Image (cartoon, rainbow, N blue to C red; front, side):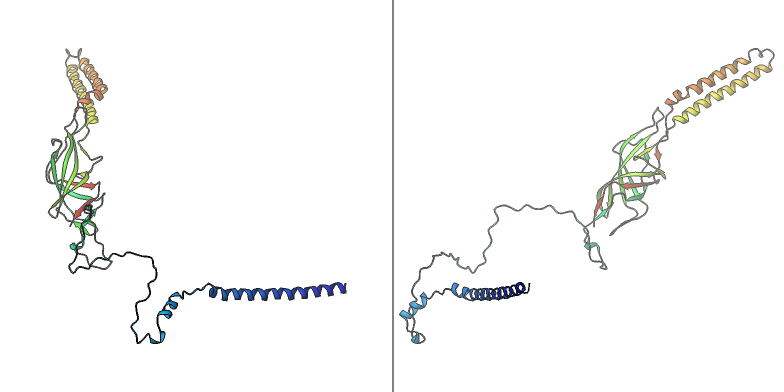
Length: 315
């Protein structure tokens, strides 16, 4: 065992020696390649220097006028130069005429916070859809109006929007879209208005709006309707039968007080009862011909409208 360990130690020493030697040789070769490589790759063109030494005396170059240098072959390149003109040249017009862009939709010039804005800083203001206005009517709104008729309104209170205030007294115009008088089916009169224009700073702008309140009453589906009086007709028809029955009872009492008429006194009551039953049972049918209520809202009444689309106002 000691002999085996001694051999192993000797082998390891020899191996380390050769390994270090190979490393050193490799490093020397690498450095030589790194140094000699660029020098070997550098090739100087000394042909022109040789031609100069043949034809010229280098010691007398400063005192003599040198003859022209020998011509060397070079790739020919044709360069065209244009003479410079003292007058300014104008560019040729383009072959195609540029399209004139339509003016973009004007927007608000938003400055940095803390700056003061004037009307000159604005080009257009947007009134958002859903904005509501309180108005008073300048004309009678009635179911007698024909489709296409115009009705004007005046705003009662200012409406504040970003960058602009719509003052009180602004005039809106509406057009009658549909209308009809009370119908025999018990349906009331009808007026449907569509807000079409608004006047702002002397200019008229188209708008799209609807009526949401008329004379302090909510309006649904933009229809200003008269009262539907069908059920009122039913009640009135039943009351007619009841009143007739009461009259026949009084007549029967008069006959009963008379010794001669006591025999026929039940007949008026029987007729009254029959009439009451007929009116009560037939009131749903008889009330079909009962007309509904009228639509007649006098001038100066209060309305409320709401915008259904954005409106752009120029300043």
